[in-house]
Every structure is written in structure tokens, then in C-alpha cells.
Image (tube, rainbow over all chains, first blue to last red; front, side, top):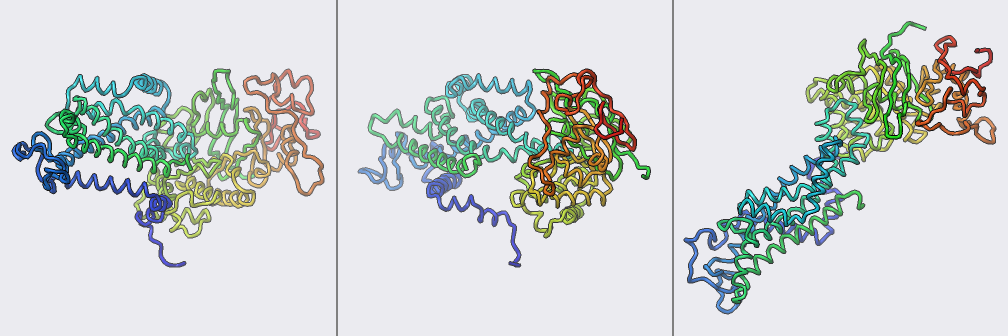
Length: 299
Length: 328
């Protein structure tokens, strides 16, 4: 009994109920494995791809229209085939996933910053500010978010910055509503009163006492949001109002391939689409696992 | 009795809540003093204004409540109208508070060491090492063994009684002049209650601070308090030294409260209760607020409200027909 107990964070984590459930959940393990692979590919992809699909100089038109490697006429260098410009689909997918993941992650970061801040303030202070923010949220929820995004992107033109702005403008509502709701219940807890009694200012009560207690919900929505933002971006790009042509994302690749789909070049469009499905599916599975594990209301 | 210094004086405090349905006079013209090293009990039924009195002192009344009039003199100045910033320097540092439910009064996401340290960071200028030592010292003072290790534990790793000890340690951290304890043992097992109460009494005495003990439990008061205020419908109906209140009470309400304490030694078939319920705070009766429930009521009780009168030796009561014989 007397052996010294280490209180390292890693050790606590490895012995937690959370980690135990994780080990026993095949979906969680598989989905996180897929996501780690996708992220590693996005980071180190440029070192292993056969060409830089953005670099027009490295494309060779004589290598266009190659089917995937396992089909007749396939080329072993181009595992998933090439498109009408001789661009390697696998390389394009890996480069495209960098754009998609960047938009998904940074989009969620910006959205959550705006949404959480508004939710915390509205929930904690209440009153007129709360009313105004929540009515704006209600109005916004009355519009289909894709419509708002299309409108904004049509107005501002395709660029990564604009798409991040559009995602933030359509995404903050969900954060604000959930965070506000949580804050309403957390602020009635006695430890919040206790913090006031100790002499904490409102600012540090919000940041130090309330925010950590709504963090679990935030983690869960954020995970699921990354998936849905990647989808939204892909849809916008597919419709031609997403990322600019010079930085193709997965959605853009689908859209490009769509033009030649009926000429029998199915691989140009299907593989990027499949990759989106795999990423979003893995994110959603992991998000569901986190929701079940972290949400005390479901326990 | 030696002459002692007043640490707190509440004069004609009125805390009213302006709700849509009308004005609730939660605390209505309450005056009392608190002396150094004293334990003052505030007792009464739910809704009697006990907690609101406590919260008024540290100016933590939420909308729609406001402190209408009155003075709260602490260290020679009136703290009723202080700004939030100035009040924050008093809260926790000079006046601290212990809440009812130790299960919810500690933040579940921080270790108790961190929560203890927070208040030291806020109100004391100590080095990291000094703070740690002070935390350990505080935990030891409230009877938590193995303090060094326990600092790293989260609240859920403590039992209710242990958590309340931690809460007490936090309240004591910056050597406050006054601790306000709002039903500190209501959520605990009876066996733990006695331990915690004795601990609080000991620490209050050792640290030279004064304690305002808010409770509905007269048995707790009898064990702990030096003086008692009995509150009913936002007013103090009787106040005096504990022994006077327990053995020579004047107000029929106090008599009712004492009569309804279950005893194991007496062979009563049924507990005495106070008939009726606390009146609707929106629609208080004219005259004495307790009259409709009082066993000794007379027609005059429904017409006029009795002033609080002094019956000697700091014993005061607001009743036309005090129950103690010869007291009139």
C-alpha cells in the first residue's frame, strides 16, 4: 500500500473509465485510427505523393485518363488513376484533404470562439443582451443554413477566407444555444455562488468556474461540427462557390470529376467523394462515442 | 459579561423582492449586532428570510431583489452601497460564506488544492510554496488526514462530510472576520453533523472570527450559538442569549419551534407542531404576522403589529402577550 502513487496526467488518463471504454469500443478505435491516418497523410502527404497536383509543370497530358492501377490500362504509379489533365487522383485527394481538413478545423475553431463567447455572455448575464442574441439565433435558424452560405459565398466570391467567414456565420448559432443552455444550469450551482462569495470577478467566474464545466458539450459539438463543416465546404465547392480553383479541396475534386463522369471516368469523381465519406463518417462515429462518454446526462 | 467589540451591525435592513406578482418583503426591518468571537444563530422556518439576511450582508442579492434601506456597518463603514469591486475585496477576505450543500459548492473540475489556492492567490500575497504550506495547514486544521495527498484529489473523491470540511477550510483560508454559514450541516448525516459543528465551533474560537449560523434546526442552535435571532416572515420576532431563548422564550413562535423538536427521552405520542403554514409572502396578514397560527392570539394581534420590546439582559421579543409568565 505504501508505494508512491504517481499523479501524472497520462497515468490518470490511462486508468480512467473513459480510456477503459475506449479500449472496449471497436468503433471508437477504428474511427480514431482512420482519423489519425487521414491527418498524418494530410501532414506528410506531400513527401510521399508522386506529384504535386497544383504544380502544372509536373502534370503530363500523355498520362491523362489513366484508370486505377488494378484495371486494364492502369499505371502502377497512379494507384487511383489520373484525370483529364494527367493529374494523379491519389495525390490530388491527399492535397485536397489538407484544404478540407484545414477548413473543417479552423472553421470549427472560429465558430466555437464566436459561439462560445456569445453563449457564455448571454447565459451568464441574461437580460437584454441574452434576448437580442437568442432572437437573432432564432431568426437565423429559420433559414436553411446552406442557403445562407450560398448567398454569402455568391456575394463575396470563392476564397478560403470567405468560406471560413460563411461557416462561422452559419455555425455560431448551435454553439451559442447549447452553451447558453448549459451556462443557465451551471450558474445556479453553489460553487458559482461560492466563487462570488470568495470575491471572484464576473470575468474569472465565467472563464474559470463556468467554462470548464461546459467544456464536455463543447468538445462533443466541435467534433461533430468538423465533419459537417467539411461536408458544407465540399457542397459549396461542388456548387462552384467554395474554394478557388487554384486550391482544390475534396469537394472541388468531386465537382471537377463530375464533368467527365458520363465519359466513363468514374474514378476522378468517386474517389474524392469516397474520401469525404470516410473522413466524415469516422468523425461522426468518434463524435457519437465522445457524446455517449462525456455527456453526464446520458449516463 | 465583558465588553466586546461589534464586528457587524445591521440596522433596519429591508431586502425586498419586486416580482410581477407583488413585493415580497423577504427581510423587513431587521436589526442586529454581531460581536467578536461570537456565534450568532439565525433560526426560523423556510421562507423566513434567514438566508436572504445572510446574502444581504455580503451584498449578493440577485434581481429582482434589492436592499431597500438599512445600514450594514462593517469595520466602521456602511457596506450596503459599496461597488462590486470594493465588495469583492471584502467577500472571501473579510467575510466568507459556507453553503448548504457541499456536493455542489465545490467546482467538480478542479482539485481541492487548486480551489483552496485560488482564494489565497486572490486575497493573500504568498509565494507558491507558502501557498502550498498554507493549504496543507488548512486541511489539517479541518481534520483531513493525509493532507499533502488529498490536495490532488477532486471533489468527487471526497465524502459529503469531508467536502464540507474542505468548504470550511476555504472559508477560513484568508482569516476572515466573519463567516456566514447557511445551513452548513443540513445536507449531512446526523452523525457527521455533530462533528462538523464542533469543528466549526473550535475553528471559530481559535481564529477569532465571528460566525453567523443560519439554520432551521434549533437543536443545532442550542449546541452552537451564543445568541439567537428567531426570524418569522422577514422579521426578527425574538432575540437573546441561547439559554434564554431555549428555556425562557417569550414569543409563541419560538415556543412552537422548540415544541416541535423530537425528543427521545420524553414519551410524547405525537410531536407538537405549529398549526397552519407560513403565510403567503405576497399577502401578509395585517397586524402580527404570526397571529393566524398563534395559540395565544387576541383580537388586538390582528389589528396592530407588535413592536420589538426589551425584556432585559439583551432579550427582546415582538409580542403583545409573551408566553413567559410575569414578563409583561
